[in-house]
Length: 219
Image 1 (tube, rainbow, N blue to C red):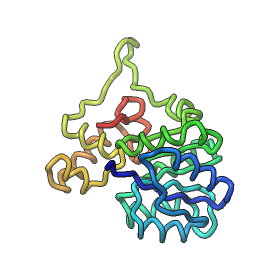
Image 2 (cartoon, rainbow, N blue to C red):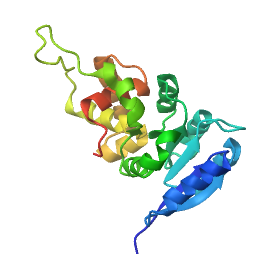
Image 3 (cartoon, one colour):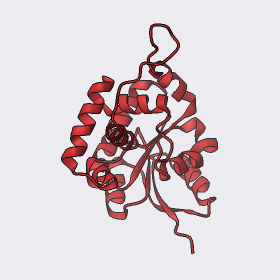
């Protein structure tokens, strides 16, 4: 018997919640872990049920989706967060990525793209709605040399590259250390060196760079 992926649904609009439930229940390998209609109830649900994915609306009463994502990064790190929103500007996307979300999906795209987004996140990737991805990542292509023919790529070591890829995919320092069989302190060192070489300072900037480099496919 195939193990089903569990998904918690959190949205304060009953019609949206029912629509999401219908989309997810149409997939044989998915099941609903529970539903919540406000941020505090969502936090309780997710920390208790520990679903594979927490699908949350950014605009919820009691605790908004960004604040909830930050709490979940500490209290339920194994639950991958996908936010569902009407906001299409990069400020909200940046906040979401900095909070540790793995997916950013527009509500207007949910009917066509929800399942694709969930599957991408479940396999270790990061999903950004195509309707805004081009706009957000367009200025993050590799830098060009003076002659315009070859990009000037930072000289990352293999280990720095491995650590940054896993960080961009949302793995914590402990998870990265376990995956690469190195110490947490070593992960921190490689990450700091790699970010310095790339001239990056936040996870959102790293994710944008990783997207431009094609790092966000499943490793």
